[in-house]
Image 1 (cartoon, helix red, strand yellow):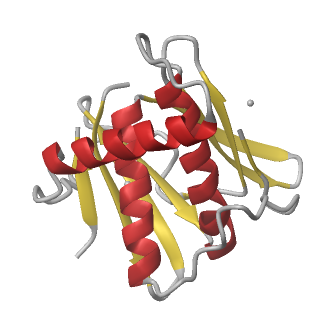
Image 2 (cartoon, rainbow, N blue to C red; image 1 turned 180 degrees about the vertical axis):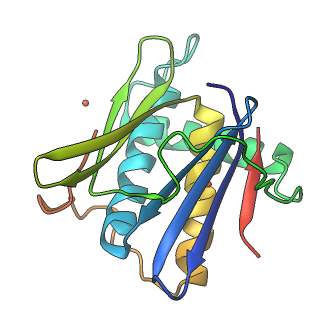
Image 3 (cartoon, helix red, strand yellow; image 1 turned 180 degrees about the horizontal axis):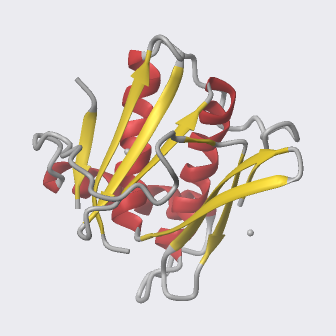
Length: 183
């Protein structure tokens, strides 16, 4: 799956964030994020991105401070070159997750040996689990974090302090009018 664009918007009526991504193959994946989950997801993505950037070939950042500085430099470079001006193209021909967005109840993140971050969005409803696996390059993770943070500000949701660990309710585990990011 080649991701073409990401979009994150606050839906006032639902009081949720709607994350949409479309692919080069005209598929659209849509996810609802509740306030509680979104506020836990951003710090977890930030921490995963630090580890992802530090694991890139040719990078020698052994301590956390150096890794964070490296990630901040990479984020600044990404934001200067990213295309946030192109409107999100919502003309999907296929909705693989169905007509309604997936209400995300759990997120799992794993650093991949290929230098990607695997993000698994899950909707658990009793014994039924529906999930979507995304393999994101560092640039897409930067874009997703940027769009999530913009939407949190627009929604007037306060961010938790970065040192606060996620609670066990709606866990985010770790081993992007609406703004859009075009990849």
